[in-house]
Image (cartoon, rainbow, N blue to C red):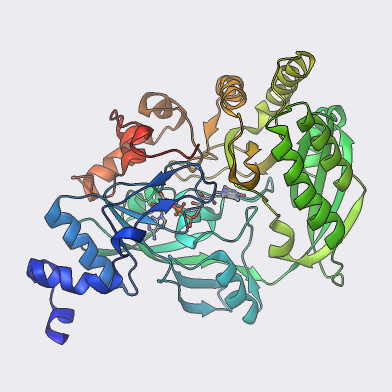
Length: 479
Ligand SMILES: Cc1cc2nc3c(=O)[nH]c(=O)nc-3n(C[C@H](O)[C@H](O)[C@H](O)COP(=O)(O)OP(=O)(O)OC[C@H]3O[C@@H](n4cnc5c(N)ncnc54)[C@H](O)[C@@H]3O)c2cc1C
């Protein structure tokens, strides 16, 4: 009704609020949430799927009146319980429009719920592209911004460093645009906010003219790569490594902008039939005979070990096939600590491989690099960064052992001033985090200013940022 749609949400009677929200409320029986990795599941008391910004305001108003917290989510690709809640959930994927494209000044303004894949399509039509990307483009733009999602390239920052301005809906129902010049503290906090400063309605993002990347891949011994790390890392714009510890080899990827013709790499038979289906079957069998994991890892390395060259549109080279649901952990360490940390991790793994009862983890270990930035909670805050990420696949969604390996890894990476990826499960609380992030206190102060009642603080935020004893046990963790 027009009078209701123009009314301020706080003036709308409760019954009318329910009626207005009803069309965007997910039916009770379907109101569950499971993250992409199939590691966390929750049952929010209500899930709303707004189609316009006013409906976000309505959901926020209802949360305020009912004393609920409101967790804003994208597509649930965070491997931890970061997106989980048992209270209200606001799924932003229908707020997915591009609002402005400026080819001259090279920026785009898009709603927070747009997926990167959709954004690439719009940008390509305007001969533009994102400057850097992580391994996938399924996530929402706001999702990658609030977690400081990163790609690789020692001179390239996390995606949040390309954000020019944000439009936010705050806990009190007001809207604010923030940037480096306007509400700058709120801006710096929101560039890696874990969804806690407010609802990101839109993002102004710096982009560049569309480009192709030429990627060279080669397999090199671990010792060569680690000994000459600086040379490798600086030998191309975007360098990343996939280390296969069972072979002691590292697949090195070097990608540069190019004007060369398209040259897609790989074949369906190799990458999909053997590389995907056969490997998944072997990983499944490895649940029962763990030594099989070593052979599977060796086979997987062999499949990709031949030198290769590919030329493609930027996002097709940046993105890779992340395969199966998975447990994952990733930590950022100062670049200067990368060599000793990687060597210590190798020593640990070699010891395990020699032990008949030792762990037989999956492959590979992904190693990437980022430039320093000034975003308060970015793991690259104030330091060039080496990221070390570990995955343990869940073949056909079935669980595999991973805790022993992840905990040993965390014990290794911690003393090297490791900072965990916010979207991936970790054990650090506010005391440890405050030692790692000089502006941790400022972040909490801004949260107190914009959301004194903690309306956007789900259990993850309460646990890791506020230090409240809220266990992950509130969620059913998939077996
Ligand atoms: C296969 C895979 C590959 C990945 N690769 C990389 C990688 O290469 N590099 C990397 O750094 N990370 C990577 N990630 C992590 C991923 O980028 C982040 O978890 C990202 O946040 C997921 O986006 P999402 O839309 O799924 O957000 P969700 O998981 O749904 O939510 C994540 C956070 O964003 C907040 N949020 C979402 N929308 C809004 C909004 N509109 N306003 C305010 N807050 C909001 C949520 O509250 C939550 O805190 C990967 C994850 C997977 C599963």
